[in-house]
Image (cartoon, rainbow, N blue to C red; front, side, top):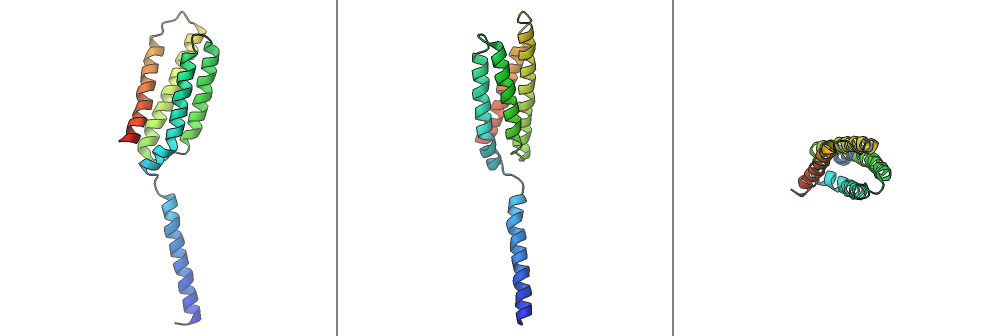
Length: 138
């Protein structure tokens, strides 16, 4: 084999190895990796939601602000998730959180209004965040 042929072979081999190495980086996100990425986001959101809800009776405006900032942080955290199963469940939880915030906003605006929508969205919120946690532990 001539030097030129060895050089071309070495370059071709390096190129193939680079493509193989990079294909591992660009592949689909595993469920385990998605869960590892979403876990701190979910845990923080749940903690913030619990804090906001527990402070709701004493300062509804502060609770609403806390929920809104939680939603913004949660959305940002979801950008790291590409696994279809975890992305779908995490996105559903975000939509439910947004709906819950809307119900909280309506209740803050009129505390004498019926709270059944707020209670229903609260239950749905717990279910949706629980579904993410269940998927990540199964």
